[in-house]
Length: 114
Length: 114
Image (tube, rainbow over all chains, first blue to last red; front, side, top):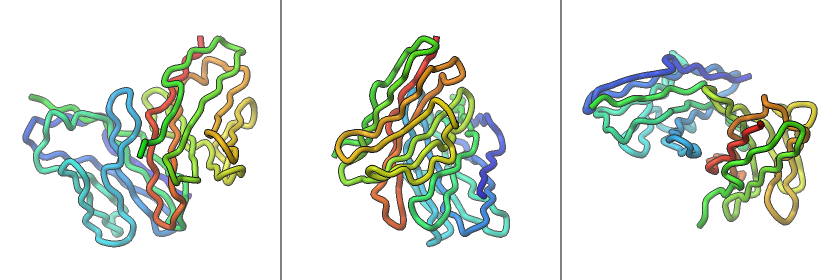
């Protein structure tokens, strides 16, 4: 069984400040981990994914995430927030056998303060 | 290469009617996943299909819901005798089905039951 916990359903940061969105996972098998972004009334767009290669994963729009097995975490960061980053962010986990369904967290709504 | 296409984008049904949601996967993708997003919640897996086969329907409600992915044509998620609780955004994702899948999401169908 797999699960994802996203701490903080709402996060607000000032423009230019560090963005940190937290994700902890539980998995009985080595996981694949994903971060998706959802803009209002849109589908999900993949930001980045961890598939057991490098533990520090770089994604689009300046985001990155670090896989820490000892902490079962996969937190998403961005050094400097931009107004366009305001959106809902979802962390997801799947098994590593391929074609596995994604199990999503409940999401974190990121607000950027001008 | 067009992305995952879902239609309609918005669907309004009266209680007791049938809702039919369509999903055309990306070109070359033979795996389709359906997810449901209730208001203020993350996405929940419903069903995973390959062409003409249901692989995993562990997330499908036992009654009124069905899904298919025929040899020709889009995948269809069918909800019979809709109730207010079925109001949600329904997302389809598709992948090639390789060992390291990357699922691409459509923009969703927002179903409102009145």
